[in-house]
Length: 188
Image (tube, rainbow, N blue to C red):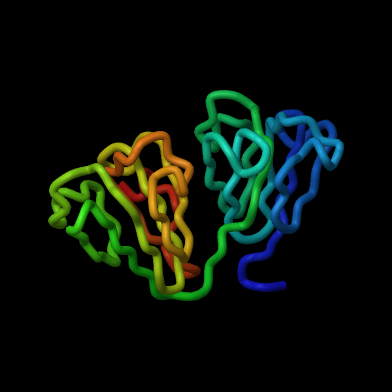
């Protein structure tokens, strides 16, 4: 098993009841596997997973780390819609990101509850380049709040490529195979 393959089990009912769907790699449409687009509980057996409330890796994103999630409120969802998922690709220990706004850019490798405090004067990003070993979680609001977006190693030329509704990003957290959990609110 590679570093970023794993296993996750989705259940139709709360507390791991009802029909289930076991996934061990990218799954672009739960309905193709006979599972309706509803998940009320999830058991993540290995690695972290990026889940989407619509098929084809579209819609609201949710990060699910190893462990048990007995109801959809545990992963901060507003409803039980779930349509696709994929493991988050983690390569090792080092990670960095370049944030671009027009011709100016900022490179950083530490989490930031407010990007303005590390020198990025505007919250409107033009593009992102993620390099190194880890992934980044970008948040629309300061202090790791609001809609979140995962960006893995690669280039993202516009906010649409990281599945955002707009280019506003105000906080970010880097994550590698040895980092703290992806939920920074738990760190405070």
